[in-house]
Length: 232
Image (cartoon, one colour):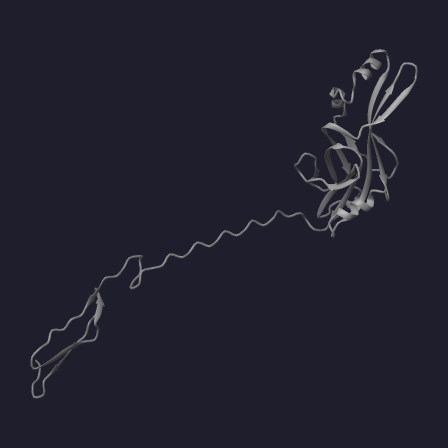
C-alpha cells in the first residue's frame, strides 16, 4: 500500500496476492516478463482528498443528518518492469474478488452513532450496504475503524451521524379476539335455568318473586288467603 500524504489514514489492505491468480489481471504476458527476469507489482495507492470533483455527487445521495468527513481516492495499479528497465503501469478499476481495506478513522470521527460508506464509480454515486452484500463494509466494535470489502476502486467517502442505526420495528401482531362467555354464569359453561310455575290454588293465591331461577337460587313464595280465611 502506498499512502500519498501525511493526512491520509494508514490504510491496510489484505490479500492483494490473490490477484496474481486472476489471468485477466496477471496475464500470460506478465508471466513471460517475470520468467525473463522482470517483475510485476500490484499496488493500492490511497490519498486523502479535501474536495474532490465527486463530492457533489456524494452530497446529493447522502442522508440529510449525515456529515461527510473523509474522502479517499483508492487506486489499484499494476506495474510491469522489464529486464531492460522499461516500466508500464495500468490502473485496475475493478477486480473479480472482494478485497478487504481497513480504514482507521481519524480521532474526531471515532465513537459516533453510525457510519455510511459512499463511493463514486464510473460517475455513479452510491452507498455500500453494511455487514453484508455483494460489496459491503463493517464498523469495528469500538468504532475506531471501518473495513470495506469491495472490488471496485475509485473515490470513497465516509459519513457519520449521531443517530445510531436501529433495526426496523417489526409490526405488532393483531390482538386475538376475546372469546365470548355464555350468559348466565362463569366457568365457560352455560347455567341451566328453570321456569317457576305456581299452580292455581283455592281459597287464596300463591305468588313467586321470580319467574325463572337457576339451580341453587332462593325463590320466595307468598301465600295470600281469601278474605275471612287465614293460612296456617
